[in-house]
Image 1 (spheres, one colour):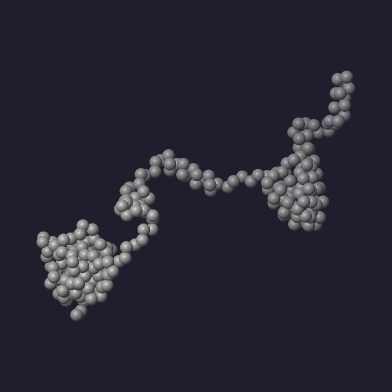
Image 2 (image 1 turned 30 degrees about the vertical axis):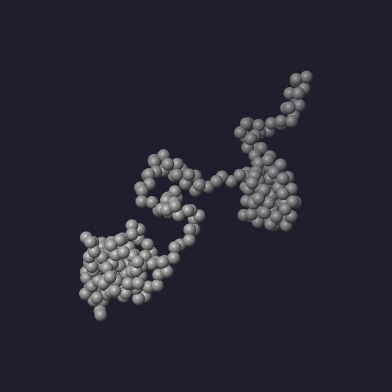
Amino acid sequence: MTLSMGARMLLIGLWSHADDGGGFEWKPVVLKARVFPADNIDVTDLLEELVRNDVIQKYDFGDRSYGAVRNFGKWQRPKKPSRFVPMPEPVRNYCASKDICADTVPELVPAECGTSAEPVPNQYGNSSAEGRKVGRDLPLTTFEDAAPPSSQDQAQTEIARIDAAAPRPVDARDQLWTHGTQVVQHSTGLPVKRAKSLIGKWLRDCGDSAETLNAILDEAVSLRPAVFKEWVTKAIQHRMQTGFRQIEDQWGLTGYDIDANAKRFEEMGQ
């Protein structure tokens, strides 16, 4: 007996598709969809090939056509056998399944197709009376078309994506007390508490401007002065004096003795 590759694969598929007696419905289109769903194969030709080699048999019962697998029952030991295909006695002998479901009347075909395996235990805690309703509330897949997102929803999604990707502004004080503390520790060897105390003093000298002190510390990291603490202190003094001179130039106060004039105005007020 020589069978083509497609016929051998179809026979394997029939073993799984047939009922416990070895019978199956002769529906080439259905068999094609179940055994070769993604292949361009003519199942009708393969069925005829299996018939010619006496591997399966085609028979009619009533107004329908069925198939039977030869000697199927020799290798089957179902604990709870059931049939969904009517099978006359000669066909049962062909399938070697005469004693499987022997009390089944050939003319009767159950509405539901049973299986030969042990029933699967109820894993979801639902009663059998719920039947096929189990799992409908939360389907794993659906063939209904989901409603397309509205333009407003798409816009909100895009805004959220851009907002999440945008860099967040760094708070100058947070940067000073985290990164700045690490810089001072590394550059001076001071413990955390003393390093923060020194940063607090420098911050007061900078007029409570965390941005200014951060800039000075960054400059110190780049220049790597030999004496870090003294360099930062001098840099703060220079930066603040330069700032005052810029204010004097802006307001035309160069050479103006603020303290002396304040005393003169006070005397005039008296």
